[in-house]
Length: 438
Ligand SMILES: *[C@@H]1O[C@H](CO)[C@@H](O)[C@H](O)[C@H]1NC(C)=O
Ligand SMILES: *[C@@H]1O[C@H](CO)[C@@H](O)[C@H](O)[C@H]1NC(C)=O
Ligand SMILES: *[C@@H]1O[C@H](CO)[C@@H](O)[C@H](O)[C@H]1NC(C)=O
Ligand SMILES: *[C@@H]1O[C@H](CO)[C@@H](O)[C@H](O)[C@H]1NC(C)=O
Ligand SMILES: *[C@@H]1O[C@H](CO)[C@@H](O)[C@H](O)[C@H]1NC(C)=O
Ligand SMILES: *[C@@H]1O[C@H](CO)[C@@H](O)[C@H](O)[C@H]1NC(C)=O
Picture: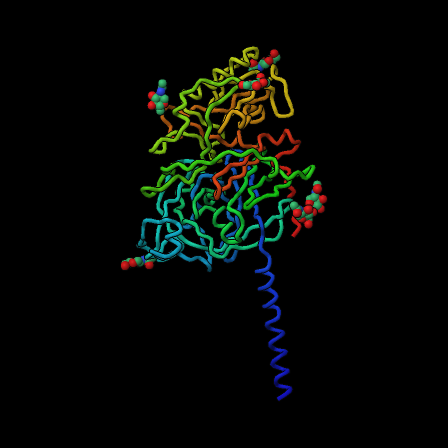
């Protein structure tokens, strides 16, 4: 008897002990923040990121969609996973995703095609195309961070996303399989990651113009530490309220849905400290969701409603009257011979453009590095484009104006923190230390 019980004890300990320590390791490490690496695609100017999804895990390239409501991926081609779970109609998942549709599929079951599942409307925000797709869950793994370096990889076993047909990839960079939605919904990646690890519903983006460097999206609160001096940039942000647009601005949406995008309250624009005369009613969001100012990672340059565009270009050109203008290079309207423009720490020496926010003392200052685009060796253009008359949103702050600026979006308190140009602090977004300390 004694030998039998000691045998069973040995068996017990040798099999269970490693399992117990494994599960402790899994649950005792709770990351305070996560990160995704981001690069810029030189041919489309899209910002790309990569997640590891499915069982077995495969890397999936995605276009970053700040205003996309959720993650969507192509399930029509090459989706193989033993952990794929379609969301049954009327389940808690469908409710959280605010799905208002229940679907059937008339071909053999596979990811993206199952009966009695609820559907969402995945949106390609580059081409403004929406379609219908199955709501599903699968495992995603992602790097954690302590704010200075990447740390160990953690996984979210049941991350919600939408399946899309392959045609929705049209217009996305080559190799991309979907869009990583950072929108302000419960199904957006920031909210799902913060719920999975119970950290703050905040995230930060820091983009770069360089198509060779790795930049970063942080999920969770700071520190956000950048080389060379190990500054924690979360400590020097300026804050402005985020506004909720009551009407969806997506390509396809269910009736009554709010916009998942991030709007801020620009009250006026100053160039070289002088207020540009604008029709200020275009700067507020009306009851149908038209107007206002949003931030976008899918527009490469800031897009302005026609009358705002003309007023800004005229004012800018007037201040730069001494600099020789050259023929415009589309999509830009005002270009200059760069040999007549000096340079500063924050880019070409041109008039500052201030987006004035909740008060005259709170403004987002755009310096030369973010206002001007070098289109050829001796030509610099004002990097704003004409959005036409009656666009849905009057000002869409685009990628070039966001680069080398840290932006923190606090979804819980509706607040944007912005750094203005990091070049002033002698760093850039590509100075995150990607050496893992896991
Ligand atoms: C869904 O149900 C229909 C009929 O009820 C059936 O013809 C079809 O094959 C089913 N599809 C899947 C994906 O199970
Ligand atoms: C993150 O970890 C690295 C290496 O362990 C350490 O040097 C650094 O100070 C940590 N950063 C923070 C913000 O705690
Ligand atoms: C800009 O204008 C403000 C008042 O509107 C004034 O206090 C400030 O000195 C001006 N700055 C420059 C550089 O002209
Ligand atoms: C200002 O913009 C609003 C909203 O588009 C428009 O209704 C109004 O006519 C514009 N006013 C002027 C003076 O152009
Ligand atoms: C810019 O100015 C330089 C020097 O004056 C001149 O050589 C060059 O041709 C000009 N470039 C353009 C595009 O006008
Ligand atoms: C980047 O982080 C690694 C790991 O913590 C560290 O060894 C290295 O010195 C850091 N690089 C710089 C340039 O500080």
